[in-house]
Image (cartoon, helix red, strand yellow):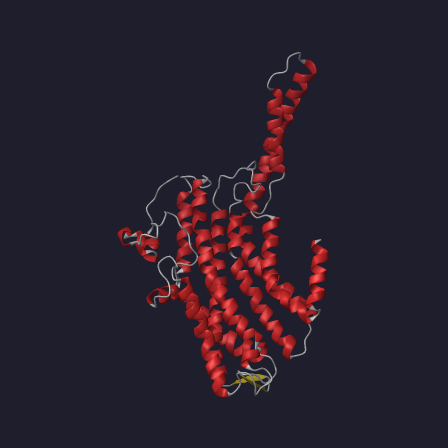
Length: 411
């Protein structure tokens, strides 16, 4: 495998790559061609300056505690000052399921997802080289795709646009006009179809909610960066094998990256669960009314995670088609030789070995998948997305009845 020195982009985002002597003993020197969707961008640099993260996403516990409490604690204090912490309105602060799930469950999961995905994705780019899927002739194209992904990931303009979108659309339009529950609550009252915030509501709308929406939108932007990188890689002349045992031409390792997005899917499911809980408890809604929202959320979340891998369908199709042609012809010749050897010769030779090898190769090419992920991985991701919604089933049936039905399914 070619051993190239880390690029200038790597050195900028990971100072230890330039000054390995400053690396702590517990942090190994970065490997060439490490790839990260997380180590970059203005917010990452801000966290570094605020000592909320290290060069390799250390200080996870501190980051989770500070970010979550920064969003949640002021809401508790201000709702106490407003007299709406546990009474005084239809939906007091301490009984608002959505706000607690959003900032004490979903937001920490978005932060945890960073280090999980960073650690699982780091070796992925090296796999393209170690498995010799990228040849020395196409290495320049591969490096260009990687550099383009880093430039987009580090874009200041992209995060500024996301911030404007959060305040201009997420808060002023979506939350104040549509998402807020139409009852008197700790964060304000709805007047003329628009929310009139309380003191706690101003912090919620100006700080806590935009922070969460920005963190979530930033993750979907990172998924776009990942999709764009894979789209460029899929246009390279990769050396895939129709007979690879992973039945994905040698790209089966990409399915492992999909499973790394489980914390992100859990956060997405928890967010929807909290929102629906408020609608059920305070607006008189029933869970079956939201089946389209649940289906839509699961579809969007899974497409965002699995969708980037669909970029490899064209090249996998070409490899499979060529493999079937080549190994089909090989199997035909081997079958003819095998038949002649065993039916017309007195002493069999090596034709049997060749026949069975050709037959196995053709079977591998025939069973080759056109997408580099498995059905099992897809089911697991679906389960991660839906798990946070399971408690809402208790609004329809009792816990005892729910457990009885689950036991019948299992046993």
